[in-house]
Amino acid sequence: MLANPTAGRGRHRGLLPELLDGLAAAGRPVRLLRAGSAAEAEATCRTAVAEGAAALVAVGGDGTVHRAMQAVAGTTVPFGPVPAGTGNDFAMETGFPADPRAAVDVIATALREGRSRPVDLARMAGLDGTLRWYGAVLAAGFDAIVNERANRMRWPRGPRRYDLAILVELARLRPRRYTLTLDEERIEVDAVLVAVGNGASYGGGMRICPAADPTDGLLDVVVGGRFDRRTLIRVKPRIYAGTHVAHPLVSTYRARTVTIAAADITTYADGERSLPLPLTITAVPAALHLLR
Image (cartoon, rainbow, N blue to C red; front, side, top):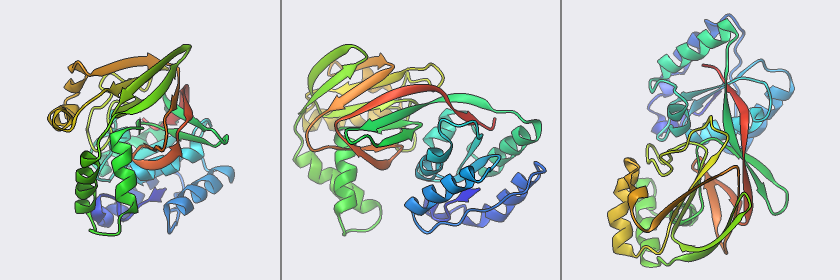
């Protein structure tokens, strides 16, 4: 089990002993993986899987799940996400209970019964050959640009830093030229929002790709075109319900393989800083086996 004690601002930190006991009820020995950073967490998970772990469980938000997922993607080692973060989009989209105790009960039952359910993942390939996986959504537009600015800022701390980054980037808002290749179809478009979803939501329930299904072998692509500041501010709240896709400036596509090219954008996948554009994303059916 990989657990992030700071996930969700630490509100579930005291639950960890109970969650470990709940997982041990499956009748298997449980080892808690220690890590001092996100990179160390990912490396520790990879080592555990290489050494023969029978299953991997991640307790935390989408970032923790994303790191652990890299170790089991494309393998037969089953995986259990326990939602305990600020954003738990992958766990929610794949049917796990919102309560961490209930999620551990589901995972322990699946372990006892030797049962798992396959779901798709999205595999990213960077220009330099780097490969990464994600389960929910990759952001390659305004949201990614805001995250990148917020991560560069040293003041203020906490959520206010992200709010300030939004204000700065809204002031600088301009459509960028993207080249998208959707299977065999090539599209050039000026846009401010580009998202590629294996799942429907990101950012703690924002349904940016509302029709995405992590079991259909396809990626959903949502492109928000030449929005000005006022229109973007009006449309953005509609993302929570997924109704933004009805706006005339929003286009949706579906493909097995998507290549995205644009200048000076670093993408964010499952909310984590990921690969720079250009990159190619491929839907990989049954790439992950969930303990459900």
